[in-house]
Image (tube, rainbow over the protein chains, first blue to last red):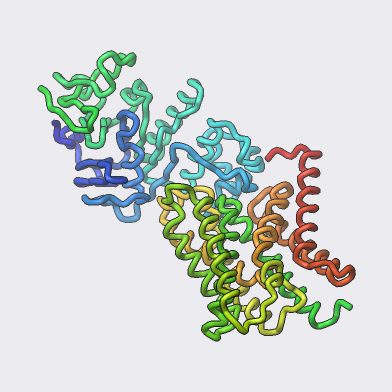
Length: 257
Length: 267
Protein backbone atom coordinates (compact mmCIF):
# COMPACT_ATOMS: atom_id res chain seq x y z
CA UNK A 1 0.00 0.00 0.00
CA UNK A 2 1.12 3.49 -0.70
CA UNK A 3 2.15 5.65 2.14
CA UNK A 4 -0.57 8.26 2.56
CA UNK A 5 1.75 11.19 2.22
CA UNK A 6 3.62 10.06 -0.84
CA UNK A 7 1.75 12.48 -3.01
CA UNK A 8 1.85 15.55 -0.84
CA UNK A 9 2.70 18.56 -2.90
CA UNK A 10 6.34 19.47 -2.81
CA UNK A 11 6.11 22.93 -1.40
CA UNK A 12 5.68 23.14 2.32
CA UNK A 13 2.07 24.04 3.08
CA UNK A 14 0.40 24.93 6.28
CA UNK A 15 -1.49 21.96 7.71
CA UNK A 16 -5.04 22.63 8.93
CA UNK A 17 -5.98 19.17 10.14
CA UNK A 18 -3.84 16.14 10.83
CA UNK A 19 -5.12 12.66 11.57
CA UNK A 20 -2.86 9.98 12.91
CA UNK A 21 -3.78 6.32 13.19
CA UNK A 22 -7.44 7.06 13.82
CA UNK A 23 -9.42 3.90 14.61
CA UNK A 24 -13.10 3.64 15.41
CA UNK A 25 -15.57 0.82 15.99
CA UNK A 26 -19.32 1.31 16.10
CA UNK A 27 -21.42 -1.50 17.56
CA UNK A 28 -18.38 -3.80 17.54
CA UNK A 29 -17.84 -3.23 13.83
CA UNK A 30 -14.58 -1.69 12.74
CA UNK A 31 -15.53 1.42 10.78
CA UNK A 32 -12.22 3.25 10.55
CA UNK A 33 -8.81 1.66 10.63
CA UNK A 34 -5.50 3.47 10.98
CA UNK A 35 -6.54 6.56 9.08
CA UNK A 36 -3.62 8.94 8.68
CA UNK A 37 -3.69 12.04 6.51
CA UNK A 38 -3.42 15.82 6.44
CA UNK A 39 -5.57 18.58 5.05
CA UNK A 40 -3.27 21.37 3.85
CA UNK A 41 -4.53 24.96 3.70
CA UNK A 42 -6.28 25.98 0.51
CA UNK A 43 -6.47 22.50 -0.98
CA UNK A 44 -9.43 20.43 -2.16
CA UNK A 45 -9.32 16.96 -0.67
CA UNK A 46 -11.97 14.49 -1.78
CA UNK A 47 -12.99 11.24 -0.15
CA UNK A 48 -14.31 8.52 -2.40
CA UNK A 49 -15.32 4.98 -1.61
CA UNK A 50 -18.30 2.64 -1.63
CA UNK A 51 -21.36 2.95 0.60
CA UNK A 52 -20.64 2.03 4.19
CA UNK A 53 -16.93 2.67 3.75
CA UNK A 54 -16.89 5.08 6.66
CA UNK A 55 -16.63 8.34 4.73
CA UNK A 56 -19.31 10.20 6.67
CA UNK A 57 -18.00 8.77 9.93
CA UNK A 58 -14.53 10.00 9.09
CA UNK A 59 -15.91 13.49 8.49
CA UNK A 60 -17.68 13.34 11.84
CA UNK A 61 -14.45 12.34 13.57
CA UNK A 62 -12.68 15.33 12.03
CA UNK A 63 -15.56 17.62 13.03
CA UNK A 64 -15.49 16.40 16.62
CA UNK A 65 -19.00 14.92 16.44
CA UNK A 66 -17.73 11.38 16.95
CA UNK A 67 -14.78 10.58 19.16
CA UNK A 68 -12.30 8.01 17.80
CA UNK A 69 -11.38 4.95 19.87
CA UNK A 70 -7.71 5.58 19.33
CA UNK A 71 -5.44 7.80 17.33
CA UNK A 72 -5.07 11.53 17.21
CA UNK A 73 -7.05 14.29 15.54
CA UNK A 74 -5.09 17.51 15.52
CA UNK A 75 -6.54 20.79 14.34
CA UNK A 76 -4.79 24.09 13.90
CA UNK A 77 -5.72 26.22 16.87
CA UNK A 78 -8.52 28.63 16.07
CA UNK A 79 -9.41 26.68 12.93
CA UNK A 80 -12.89 27.57 11.72
CA UNK A 81 -14.73 24.72 10.04
CA UNK A 82 -17.99 25.01 8.12
CA UNK A 83 -19.95 21.78 7.85
CA UNK A 84 -22.63 20.97 5.30
CA UNK A 85 -24.09 17.58 6.25
CA UNK A 86 -25.30 14.99 3.78
CA UNK A 87 -28.96 15.22 4.51
CA UNK A 88 -30.81 17.72 6.61
CA UNK A 89 -33.71 16.56 8.68
CA UNK A 90 -35.18 19.92 9.57
CA UNK A 91 -38.20 19.43 11.80
CA UNK A 92 -41.17 20.72 9.81
CA UNK A 93 -42.78 21.70 13.07
CA UNK A 94 -40.50 24.72 13.43
CA UNK A 95 -41.55 28.04 11.97
CA UNK A 96 -38.34 29.22 10.36
CA UNK A 97 -37.50 31.80 7.72
CA UNK A 98 -34.28 31.58 5.73
CA UNK A 99 -33.06 34.71 7.51
CA UNK A 100 -33.58 33.22 10.94
CA UNK A 101 -31.98 29.98 9.75
CA UNK A 102 -28.85 31.84 8.68
CA UNK A 103 -28.80 33.49 12.11
CA UNK A 104 -29.43 30.30 14.07
CA UNK A 105 -26.75 30.87 16.67
CA UNK A 106 -25.23 34.25 15.81
CA UNK A 107 -26.98 37.33 14.49
CA UNK A 108 -25.74 39.01 11.33
CA UNK A 109 -26.91 42.24 9.78
CA UNK A 110 -28.70 42.31 6.44
CA UNK A 111 -25.63 43.54 4.55
CA UNK A 112 -23.63 40.46 5.56
CA UNK A 113 -26.56 38.18 4.78
CA UNK A 114 -27.09 39.63 1.31
CA UNK A 115 -23.34 39.35 0.76
CA UNK A 116 -23.24 35.58 1.28
CA UNK A 117 -26.47 35.13 -0.67
CA UNK A 118 -24.80 36.87 -3.61
CA UNK A 119 -21.79 34.62 -3.29
CA UNK A 120 -23.93 31.51 -3.32
CA UNK A 121 -26.15 32.70 -6.17
CA UNK A 122 -29.33 33.27 -4.20
CA UNK A 123 -31.67 36.26 -4.47
CA UNK A 124 -32.01 38.45 -1.36
CA UNK A 125 -35.79 37.95 -1.43
CA UNK A 126 -35.25 34.41 -0.18
CA UNK A 127 -34.46 35.79 3.29
CA UNK A 128 -38.11 36.31 4.15
CA UNK A 129 -39.27 32.96 2.80
CA UNK A 130 -39.97 29.93 4.93
CA UNK A 131 -37.15 27.39 4.88
CA UNK A 132 -39.38 24.36 4.40
CA UNK A 133 -40.55 24.63 0.78
CA UNK A 134 -37.03 25.31 -0.57
CA UNK A 135 -35.82 23.02 -3.32
CA UNK A 136 -32.83 20.74 -2.80
CA UNK A 137 -30.52 23.06 -4.71
CA UNK A 138 -31.67 26.16 -2.85
CA UNK A 139 -31.31 24.37 0.47
CA UNK A 140 -27.73 23.33 -0.31
CA UNK A 141 -26.90 26.91 -1.22
CA UNK A 142 -28.53 28.22 1.94
CA UNK A 143 -26.53 25.73 4.00
CA UNK A 144 -23.37 26.81 2.24
CA UNK A 145 -24.27 30.47 2.79
CA UNK A 146 -24.71 29.74 6.50
CA UNK A 147 -21.24 28.24 6.76
CA UNK A 148 -19.71 31.11 4.76
CA UNK A 149 -20.99 33.60 7.35
CA UNK A 150 -18.52 32.00 9.76
CA UNK A 151 -15.68 32.68 7.31
CA UNK A 152 -14.33 29.16 7.58
CA UNK A 153 -10.74 28.10 6.80
CA UNK A 154 -12.06 24.66 5.93
CA UNK A 155 -15.34 23.61 4.37
CA UNK A 156 -16.49 20.07 5.06
CA UNK A 157 -19.16 18.83 2.68
CA UNK A 158 -20.81 15.42 2.65
CA UNK A 159 -22.06 14.53 -0.82
CA UNK A 160 -23.05 18.14 -1.41
CA UNK A 161 -24.80 17.68 -4.76
CA UNK A 162 -26.89 14.67 -3.86
CA UNK A 163 -30.36 15.18 -5.27
CA UNK A 164 -29.42 18.08 -7.53
CA UNK A 165 -30.07 18.00 -11.26
CA UNK A 166 -27.01 17.93 -13.55
CA UNK A 167 -27.04 21.68 -14.12
CA UNK A 168 -27.43 22.43 -10.42
CA UNK A 169 -24.67 19.96 -9.74
CA UNK A 170 -22.27 21.64 -12.11
CA UNK A 171 -23.11 25.08 -10.76
CA UNK A 172 -22.59 23.95 -7.20
CA UNK A 173 -19.18 22.50 -7.95
CA UNK A 174 -18.25 25.66 -9.85
CA UNK A 175 -19.28 27.64 -6.79
CA UNK A 176 -17.08 25.49 -4.54
CA UNK A 177 -14.16 25.93 -6.89
CA UNK A 178 -14.64 29.65 -6.88
CA UNK A 179 -14.73 29.76 -3.09
CA UNK A 180 -11.57 27.70 -3.00
CA UNK A 181 -9.86 30.07 -5.44
CA UNK A 182 -11.05 33.43 -4.11
CA UNK A 183 -11.23 32.79 -0.38
CA UNK A 184 -8.35 30.30 -0.21
CA UNK A 185 -10.76 28.11 1.68
CA UNK A 186 -9.71 24.47 1.95
CA UNK A 187 -12.38 21.92 1.10
CA UNK A 188 -12.83 18.40 2.35
CA UNK A 189 -15.70 16.60 0.71
CA UNK A 190 -17.24 13.24 0.09
CA UNK A 191 -18.31 12.81 -3.49
CA UNK A 192 -19.36 10.16 -5.93
CA UNK A 193 -19.04 12.39 -8.96
CA UNK A 194 -15.77 10.95 -10.08
CA UNK A 195 -15.43 13.10 -13.18
CA UNK A 196 -15.63 16.20 -11.01
CA UNK A 197 -13.44 14.69 -8.34
CA UNK A 198 -10.72 13.82 -10.80
CA UNK A 199 -10.91 17.21 -12.47
CA UNK A 200 -11.15 19.47 -9.46
CA UNK A 201 -9.40 17.91 -6.49
CA UNK A 202 -5.86 18.43 -5.37
CA UNK A 203 -5.94 15.15 -3.60
CA UNK A 204 -8.16 12.09 -3.62
CA UNK A 205 -8.42 9.63 -0.76
CA UNK A 206 -10.00 6.32 -1.57
CA UNK A 207 -11.55 4.92 1.57
CA UNK A 208 -12.91 1.58 2.53
CA UNK A 209 -12.57 1.54 6.31
CA UNK A 210 -8.87 2.23 5.79
CA UNK A 211 -7.22 4.44 3.22
CA UNK A 212 -6.99 2.17 0.19
CA UNK A 213 -4.92 4.65 -1.75
CA UNK A 214 -4.44 8.35 -2.02
CA UNK A 215 -2.83 10.88 -4.23
CA UNK A 216 -3.30 13.43 -6.95
CA UNK A 217 -6.09 12.48 -9.36
CA UNK A 218 -3.68 11.96 -12.27
CA UNK A 219 -1.37 9.79 -10.25
CA UNK A 220 -4.11 7.75 -8.68
CA UNK A 221 -5.46 6.85 -12.09
CA UNK A 222 -2.16 5.58 -13.31
CA UNK A 223 -1.24 3.51 -10.27
CA UNK A 224 -0.37 0.16 -11.83
CA UNK A 225 -1.47 -3.33 -10.92
CA UNK A 226 -4.38 -2.36 -8.68
CA UNK A 227 -7.84 -3.78 -8.57
CA UNK A 228 -10.81 -1.42 -8.53
CA UNK A 229 -12.86 -1.03 -5.47
CA UNK A 230 -16.09 -0.54 -7.35
CA UNK A 231 -15.68 -3.58 -9.61
CA UNK A 232 -13.88 -4.05 -12.88
CA UNK A 233 -16.43 -2.75 -15.32
CA UNK A 234 -17.09 0.64 -13.86
CA UNK A 235 -19.07 2.73 -16.32
CA UNK A 236 -17.03 5.74 -15.36
CA UNK A 237 -14.10 5.68 -17.68
CA UNK A 238 -12.17 8.21 -15.65
CA UNK A 239 -12.26 6.02 -12.63
CA UNK A 240 -9.61 3.61 -13.74
CA UNK A 241 -7.41 3.26 -10.74
CA UNK A 242 -6.82 -0.10 -9.16
CA UNK A 243 -5.97 -1.39 -5.73
CA UNK A 244 -3.42 -3.77 -4.39
CA UNK A 245 -5.98 -5.58 -2.27
CA UNK A 246 -9.47 -7.01 -2.29
CA UNK A 247 -12.22 -6.50 0.28
CA UNK A 248 -13.74 -9.93 0.91
CA UNK A 249 -17.40 -10.29 1.94
CA UNK A 250 -16.43 -11.24 5.50
CA UNK A 251 -14.69 -7.91 5.88
CA UNK A 252 -11.16 -9.25 5.67
CA UNK A 253 -8.59 -7.91 3.24
CA UNK A 254 -6.70 -10.00 0.75
CA UNK A 255 -3.56 -8.50 -0.73
CA UNK A 256 -2.76 -9.18 -4.32
CA UNK A 257 0.05 -7.91 -6.44
CA UNK B 1 -65.30 37.46 42.29
CA UNK B 2 -61.89 37.54 40.51
CA UNK B 3 -60.30 39.32 43.45
CA UNK B 4 -60.87 36.35 45.77
CA UNK B 5 -57.37 35.26 46.96
CA UNK B 6 -57.84 31.62 45.95
CA UNK B 7 -58.79 32.63 42.43
CA UNK B 8 -55.84 35.01 42.18
CA UNK B 9 -53.50 32.30 43.38
CA UNK B 10 -54.95 29.91 40.82
CA UNK B 11 -54.61 32.52 38.10
CA UNK B 12 -50.96 33.13 39.01
CA UNK B 13 -50.13 29.43 39.04
CA UNK B 14 -51.92 28.70 35.79
CA UNK B 15 -50.59 31.88 34.15
CA UNK B 16 -46.97 31.05 34.97
CA UNK B 17 -47.53 27.59 33.59
CA UNK B 18 -49.06 28.94 30.37
CA UNK B 19 -46.31 31.50 29.76
CA UNK B 20 -43.58 28.88 30.15
CA UNK B 21 -45.49 26.35 28.07
CA UNK B 22 -44.93 28.52 24.99
CA UNK B 23 -41.14 28.23 24.66
CA UNK B 24 -40.74 24.86 26.42
CA UNK B 25 -43.52 23.25 24.41
CA UNK B 26 -41.93 24.60 21.22
CA UNK B 27 -38.57 23.02 22.06
CA UNK B 28 -40.31 19.74 22.77
CA UNK B 29 -42.19 19.79 19.47
CA UNK B 30 -39.05 20.71 17.49
CA UNK B 31 -37.12 17.91 19.08
CA UNK B 32 -39.95 15.52 18.21
CA UNK B 33 -40.25 14.49 21.85
CA UNK B 34 -43.92 15.10 22.49
CA UNK B 35 -44.19 11.90 24.53
CA UNK B 36 -41.51 12.97 26.90
CA UNK B 37 -43.57 15.16 29.21
CA UNK B 38 -46.12 12.35 29.57
CA UNK B 39 -43.52 9.94 30.86
CA UNK B 40 -42.25 12.56 33.29
CA UNK B 41 -45.64 13.63 34.59
CA UNK B 42 -46.65 10.02 35.16
CA UNK B 43 -43.68 9.55 37.44
CA UNK B 44 -44.87 12.49 39.54
CA UNK B 45 -47.19 10.38 41.69
CA UNK B 46 -44.16 8.48 42.94
CA UNK B 47 -42.70 11.90 43.75
CA UNK B 48 -45.72 12.76 45.87
CA UNK B 49 -45.12 9.58 47.85
CA UNK B 50 -41.43 10.38 48.23
CA UNK B 51 -42.25 13.88 49.39
CA UNK B 52 -44.63 12.58 52.04
CA UNK B 53 -42.28 9.77 53.03
CA UNK B 54 -39.26 12.02 53.51
CA UNK B 55 -41.30 14.84 54.96
CA UNK B 56 -39.89 17.37 52.46
CA UNK B 57 -43.29 18.27 51.06
CA UNK B 58 -45.07 16.97 48.00
CA UNK B 59 -43.78 19.65 45.61
CA UNK B 60 -40.14 19.02 46.46
CA UNK B 61 -40.67 15.26 46.24
CA UNK B 62 -42.21 15.63 42.79
CA UNK B 63 -39.41 17.90 41.59
CA UNK B 64 -36.75 15.43 42.79
CA UNK B 65 -38.36 12.37 41.20
CA UNK B 66 -39.21 14.08 37.93
CA UNK B 67 -35.73 15.57 37.55
CA UNK B 68 -34.15 12.19 38.32
CA UNK B 69 -36.37 10.46 35.77
CA UNK B 70 -35.47 13.10 33.20
CA UNK B 71 -31.74 12.69 33.76
CA UNK B 72 -32.13 8.92 33.55
CA UNK B 73 -33.91 9.33 30.24
CA UNK B 74 -31.05 11.46 28.84
CA UNK B 75 -28.80 8.44 29.22
CA UNK B 76 -31.02 5.89 27.54
CA UNK B 77 -33.28 7.71 25.13
CA UNK B 78 -31.08 8.11 22.03
CA UNK B 79 -29.70 4.64 21.60
CA UNK B 80 -32.67 2.57 22.64
CA UNK B 81 -33.27 -0.15 20.13
CA UNK B 82 -37.07 -0.35 20.30
CA UNK B 83 -37.54 3.38 19.90
CA UNK B 84 -37.72 6.26 22.31
CA UNK B 85 -41.49 6.66 22.11
CA UNK B 86 -42.09 3.11 23.26
CA UNK B 87 -39.52 3.39 26.01
CA UNK B 88 -41.15 6.55 27.30
CA UNK B 89 -44.54 4.87 27.30
CA UNK B 90 -43.24 1.91 29.30
CA UNK B 91 -41.47 4.09 31.84
CA UNK B 92 -44.39 6.49 32.19
CA UNK B 93 -47.09 3.89 32.66
CA UNK B 94 -44.96 1.85 35.05
CA UNK B 95 -44.19 4.89 37.15
CA UNK B 96 -47.88 5.78 37.25
CA UNK B 97 -48.86 2.30 38.40
CA UNK B 98 -46.13 2.24 41.04
CA UNK B 99 -47.42 5.55 42.31
CA UNK B 100 -51.02 4.35 42.41
CA UNK B 101 -50.12 1.14 44.25
CA UNK B 102 -47.85 3.04 46.62
CA UNK B 103 -50.56 5.53 47.41
CA UNK B 104 -52.91 2.66 48.13
CA UNK B 105 -50.42 0.89 50.40
CA UNK B 106 -49.65 3.86 52.59
CA UNK B 107 -52.26 3.90 55.32
CA UNK B 108 -53.37 7.10 56.93
CA UNK B 109 -52.85 9.31 53.89
CA UNK B 110 -56.04 10.91 52.77
CA UNK B 111 -55.64 11.52 49.12
CA UNK B 112 -57.82 13.04 46.52
CA UNK B 113 -56.66 11.07 43.50
CA UNK B 114 -58.59 13.13 40.99
CA UNK B 115 -56.74 16.26 42.14
CA UNK B 116 -53.46 14.54 41.25
CA UNK B 117 -54.79 13.27 37.94
CA UNK B 118 -56.66 16.34 36.72
CA UNK B 119 -55.31 19.14 38.88
CA UNK B 120 -57.03 21.42 41.32
CA UNK B 121 -55.98 24.92 40.43
CA UNK B 122 -58.34 26.61 42.85
CA UNK B 123 -56.67 24.94 45.83
CA UNK B 124 -53.20 26.35 45.11
CA UNK B 125 -51.70 27.47 48.42
CA UNK B 126 -49.16 30.21 49.10
CA UNK B 127 -46.54 27.51 49.62
CA UNK B 128 -47.38 26.07 46.21
CA UNK B 129 -47.04 29.54 44.72
CA UNK B 130 -43.62 29.93 46.29
CA UNK B 131 -42.56 26.60 44.77
CA UNK B 132 -43.95 27.67 41.39
CA UNK B 133 -42.06 30.97 41.61
CA UNK B 134 -38.75 29.20 42.31
CA UNK B 135 -39.07 26.53 39.61
CA UNK B 136 -40.53 29.04 37.16
CA UNK B 137 -37.60 31.42 37.63
CA UNK B 138 -35.18 28.53 37.14
CA UNK B 139 -36.91 27.67 33.87
CA UNK B 140 -36.81 31.29 32.76
CA UNK B 141 -33.09 31.58 33.51
CA UNK B 142 -32.27 28.32 31.69
CA UNK B 143 -34.36 29.41 28.71
CA UNK B 144 -32.88 32.88 28.58
CA UNK B 145 -29.27 31.72 28.47
CA UNK B 146 -29.77 28.71 26.19
CA UNK B 147 -32.56 29.66 23.81
CA UNK B 148 -30.46 30.05 20.65
CA UNK B 149 -28.37 27.00 21.42
CA UNK B 150 -31.49 24.97 22.10
CA UNK B 151 -32.90 25.91 18.70
CA UNK B 152 -29.55 25.24 17.03
CA UNK B 153 -29.30 21.74 18.52
CA UNK B 154 -32.93 20.97 17.72
CA UNK B 155 -32.57 22.05 14.08
CA UNK B 156 -29.01 21.02 13.19
CA UNK B 157 -27.60 18.78 15.93
CA UNK B 158 -24.50 17.62 14.03
CA UNK B 159 -23.63 21.08 12.79
CA UNK B 160 -24.09 22.47 16.30
CA UNK B 161 -21.71 19.87 17.69
CA UNK B 162 -19.17 20.68 14.97
CA UNK B 163 -19.38 24.35 15.95
CA UNK B 164 -18.56 23.59 19.57
CA UNK B 165 -22.08 23.71 20.96
CA UNK B 166 -22.28 20.71 23.27
CA UNK B 167 -25.40 18.83 22.23
CA UNK B 168 -25.12 16.57 25.26
CA UNK B 169 -25.21 19.60 27.56
CA UNK B 170 -28.16 21.09 25.68
CA UNK B 171 -30.02 17.77 25.98
CA UNK B 172 -29.58 17.81 29.74
CA UNK B 173 -30.79 21.42 29.88
CA UNK B 174 -33.80 20.51 27.78
CA UNK B 175 -34.67 17.58 30.01
CA UNK B 176 -34.30 19.70 33.14
CA UNK B 177 -36.51 22.41 31.65
CA UNK B 178 -39.20 19.85 30.96
CA UNK B 179 -38.87 18.28 34.38
CA UNK B 180 -39.11 21.65 36.15
CA UNK B 181 -42.09 22.59 34.01
CA UNK B 182 -43.88 19.34 34.79
CA UNK B 183 -43.38 19.76 38.51
CA UNK B 184 -44.65 23.34 38.51
CA UNK B 185 -47.61 22.57 36.25
CA UNK B 186 -48.92 19.58 38.19
CA UNK B 187 -50.96 21.60 40.63
CA UNK B 188 -52.77 23.32 37.76
CA UNK B 189 -53.14 20.58 35.22
CA UNK B 190 -52.85 17.30 37.05
CA UNK B 191 -50.55 14.64 35.72
CA UNK B 192 -52.82 13.50 32.91
CA UNK B 193 -53.22 16.92 31.30
CA UNK B 194 -49.69 18.36 31.59
CA UNK B 195 -48.75 17.38 28.04
CA UNK B 196 -51.93 18.77 26.54
CA UNK B 197 -51.50 22.22 28.07
CA UNK B 198 -47.79 22.17 27.32
CA UNK B 199 -48.01 21.15 23.68
CA UNK B 200 -51.32 22.28 22.18
CA UNK B 201 -50.69 26.06 22.48
CA UNK B 202 -47.32 25.99 20.64
CA UNK B 203 -48.75 23.52 18.14
CA UNK B 204 -51.54 25.99 17.39
CA UNK B 205 -48.98 28.80 17.19
CA UNK B 206 -47.12 26.93 14.46
CA UNK B 207 -49.88 27.89 12.04
CA UNK B 208 -49.58 31.60 12.79
CA UNK B 209 -45.91 32.30 13.44
CA UNK B 210 -43.03 32.79 11.01
CA UNK B 211 -40.07 32.55 13.34
CA UNK B 212 -39.20 30.31 16.32
CA UNK B 213 -39.51 33.26 18.70
CA UNK B 214 -42.85 34.22 17.21
CA UNK B 215 -44.04 30.67 17.69
CA UNK B 216 -42.97 30.64 21.34
CA UNK B 217 -44.61 33.98 22.15
CA UNK B 218 -47.81 33.13 20.28
CA UNK B 219 -47.85 29.81 22.13
CA UNK B 220 -47.62 31.62 25.45
CA UNK B 221 -50.44 33.98 24.50
CA UNK B 222 -52.71 31.16 23.35
CA UNK B 223 -51.91 29.34 26.58
CA UNK B 224 -52.67 32.40 28.70
CA UNK B 225 -55.99 32.95 26.96
CA UNK B 226 -56.97 29.29 27.44
CA UNK B 227 -56.00 29.38 31.08
CA UNK B 228 -58.09 32.47 31.80
CA UNK B 229 -61.08 31.05 29.88
CA UNK B 230 -60.76 27.69 31.61
CA UNK B 231 -60.57 29.31 35.00
CA UNK B 232 -63.62 31.45 34.20
CA UNK B 233 -65.53 28.29 33.26
CA UNK B 234 -64.52 26.81 36.56
CA UNK B 235 -65.50 29.90 38.58
CA UNK B 236 -68.79 30.75 36.85
CA UNK B 237 -70.09 27.38 35.70
CA UNK B 238 -68.39 25.13 38.24
CA UNK B 239 -66.68 23.13 35.52
CA UNK B 240 -63.38 21.31 36.22
CA UNK B 241 -60.64 23.88 35.52
CA UNK B 242 -57.88 21.91 33.76
CA UNK B 243 -60.19 20.04 31.38
CA UNK B 244 -61.89 23.34 30.50
CA UNK B 245 -58.48 24.89 29.73
CA UNK B 246 -57.66 21.92 27.53
CA UNK B 247 -60.91 22.26 25.62
CA UNK B 248 -60.24 25.97 25.01
CA UNK B 249 -56.72 25.08 23.78
CA UNK B 250 -58.16 22.48 21.43
CA UNK B 251 -60.75 24.88 20.03
CA UNK B 252 -58.04 27.51 19.45
CA UNK B 253 -55.89 24.88 17.78
CA UNK B 254 -58.73 24.04 15.43
CA UNK B 255 -59.31 27.72 14.68
CA UNK B 256 -55.63 28.32 13.90
CA UNK B 257 -55.69 25.24 11.69
CA UNK B 258 -58.67 26.55 9.72
CA UNK B 259 -57.28 30.07 9.51
CA UNK B 260 -54.07 28.68 8.13
CA UNK B 261 -55.92 26.71 5.47
CA UNK B 262 -57.96 29.72 4.43
CA UNK B 263 -54.92 31.91 3.90
CA UNK B 264 -53.01 29.08 2.27
CA UNK B 265 -49.88 30.04 4.12
CA UNK B 266 -47.13 27.77 2.94
CA UNK B 267 -45.55 25.94 5.81
